[in-house]
Each structure stands twice: as C-alpha cells, then as structure tokens.
Length: 348
Image (tube, rainbow, N blue to C red; front, side, top):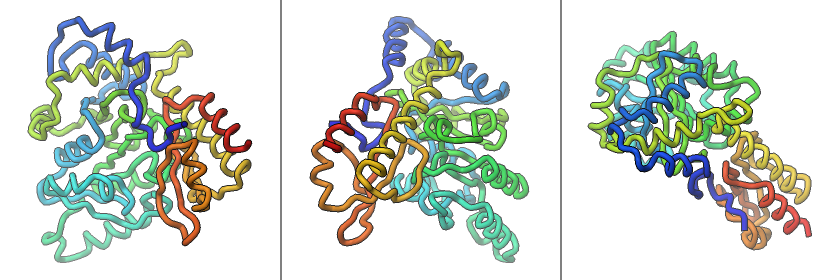
C-alpha cells in the first residue's frame, strides 16, 4: 500500500530526527533565542538572498495564517484572496475568528487573476461609501495553489505591482513551497523574496514533524512581533523545536543545495512518474493540469475499489454519475520503490 492521501501523513526526514537527537541534551534559551533558531534564520536569509529578512517560527499552517494576517491587518481591514484559497475554504473560519473578513474573488485554475484583483480594487476605492466597508489590507495567494497549479513569474510580478500601487502587502502561503519551487520554471526563493512582502516556508508538509518559517524579506514586520505572536498563543516556549528542524532542512547538502529544495524535487519527480502511470498506462484523464506533487485525475467509479487495494488517496469531487475526481499526493517521504511497485501492481 502506498499512501498518497496527503503530504503530511508521515513523520520527519531522518536528517531532522538526527539533528533533534544530536542537540537534545543541550540547554538553550527559550522563545527562539537559541543558537539553532538563529542559525536557521541566517541560513534562510542566505537561501532567500535577503540579508535583512526577519524570520519567525510557528507550529502549523492555519495557526500561521490566522496569526500573521491578524498581526498585519488593522481592525477594520480584510484579506483578499481567490475563492479556492485555503483561508477561505479549509481553515474553519480561523481568519474570521480573529475579526477580519476574507474577501473572496473568483479563481482561475486555483489562481487569483491580477485583472480581477485590479478591477475589484478600483471599484472599491471609487465607491463613495468605502469608509463604511471592510477595507482591503492584504492580498493572499498560495504557491502552489490548492489545485497544484503555479503562478508564473510574470503573474506574480503583476500581483506585486498592483499591491504596490494600492499600498497593500502581498502574502504568500508557502505550505507546499518546496514542491512549488521544484516544479516552477521561473520562480525561486530569491525572486519570491523580492515579489512578496511576507511568505512562509512550509515545513509540516516537507520534512519536519511540525513547523513553518514566516519570512518578512524586507525586515518590516509589525512592531513587537513576538508579543503579537504570543498574544495568539502561537509563541513556542521551546521554539528551538522548530528552529532545529529548519536548521537541518536549510543546511547545505553535499551538492551545496539546502535539503529542503532537494526534497521538493524528489516529490515532484515521483508525481510525474504517477502522471505517466495514470495517463499513459491506465488512460485516466487529468482533472486539472498540475505540475506539482498534487495530482488530480478523473477516475471511473467502478475502478475505485481496485485502486483502494493499492493506494490511499482522497476523493476530491464528483464529476458525473460514473466518475470522481481524486487527488494523489506525493511527498518528501514517497519513494521510487513504492511508485515502481504500484506501477507493477496496477498494470499487471
């Protein structure tokens, strides 16, 4: 059985666990003042080519989104996203719970289109009653999107330019950032650091037991950020628990590249192997064309019981009376042996 239900149904990469054990007996400062967390921050600054970046470690994605969005927004502001965005669909109203409205615009293959954003902002600020409405205070996107699609560098530049024009920060949810960077033809960490005002590097879905690294690449985080994070119950006393993990992920591998990026490439490569198996071998049609570790296929309902004998996966949405769109997700923990064995089983 190969488990492709999600990319967070596993433990941690062996290098992360080893680093835990190697540093376990050492006493250190709390609340992120330990040397491991500081070294991890420096490694992230170097990978992003952002020497002035401020980096904060939090435990999980929903916690990160709700905390950072609330810390950045004024009480009367909301966050603009597309209607498939994670904060709009799968976070149980966490952002709204902090008192901020999520303003959802139509998605296009999971992406927020700049022309839609610009048109909406123009309409908002042209409205004479705008002072009586929730003011847009942030634009939120995910990279990759909830459907596994990617923004191009030009699309990201366009969103960045619109946000600059309206003086609104652009926030990029990077829960699956490693896989997006691995699949992208033109976006890397340094470019993302130039085009996003805030983003986070997702560890939970790529090699850590838990943890996300929030990056303010220009060093302009809100004042008293630790106090703000603690007020949300998101400041870990043992912050080194996350810092140690990111130190392991961003320490150079033998090839000089951070382990984090190579893990993303491995998962995407195996996702492309799955695509070959499902499309060319089994004749399934893609539900959406995703170049990342999330793969979506239209499966005949009659085939589902047989697939479940060999694969753990997630039914995504009914397509018609006889077909279901299903999601198959590779991760840093997926192995080529597993995919090879699956191919043999399904094609035999």
